[in-house]
Length: 264
Image 1 (tube, helix red, strand yellow):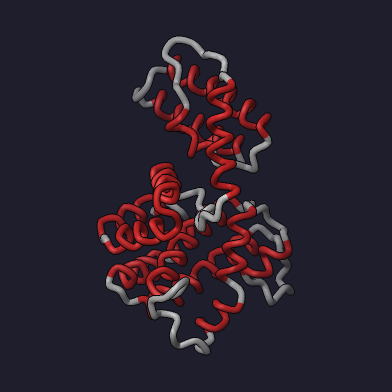
Image 2 (cartoon, helix red, strand yellow; image 1 turned 90 degrees about the vertical axis):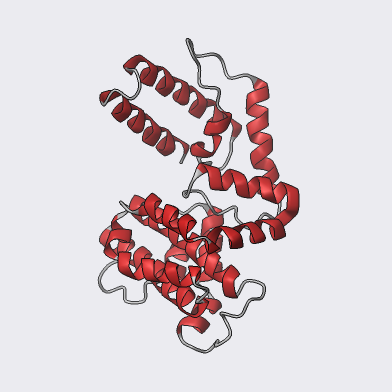
């Protein structure tokens, strides 16, 4: 939610001021500015946007907090409306990084979903890039618990072994989410058949609508076929399979790690 993102940024600003990286008054000024942005963004009626995506467009004030003008608000609304109404395949991404989200949206505007697909293929073939993503999530509790499994699966992707990366990451995403909802006591011990598809359908936790759609898609018939061995061709490179499916599974993992960390 917008307010949650604002709180996270303000907490980071507070810590930065405490260790002397920024001046206390500067931290206070930016915090007040972000509150103002939050209020005005809410007035637009945008659906639970990630305020972190807006940071590159927010003119941080130098000496005072100016009024947010209509042009600024219209520009933000136009950007989100464009993506919301488009067939962009990665609307469900929201917790990885500002830069990646912006790059993918810009690539989509230039070259459509095919351009995004090719960009992601090159991005995740690079081992250094993969290690950078690991760094983003290294402090996440569920990543720490499953580090060896996840790292092996990510390395398998880099090496082109999609026979391994896809089923392992599908299973881990499922396990991470199930563990999180049970730990938060969203289900009772007697509830035996808890899985990602059921969690999404039951709506006992709040999941952004595009991510909910992605999880339903990933954890329907396709998951069953892959994990139960009835589809021996899932690793072959074609639409929504092979390398492309492995990438979507990796990105889904990142979203699930973030989602699980917020379930209380």
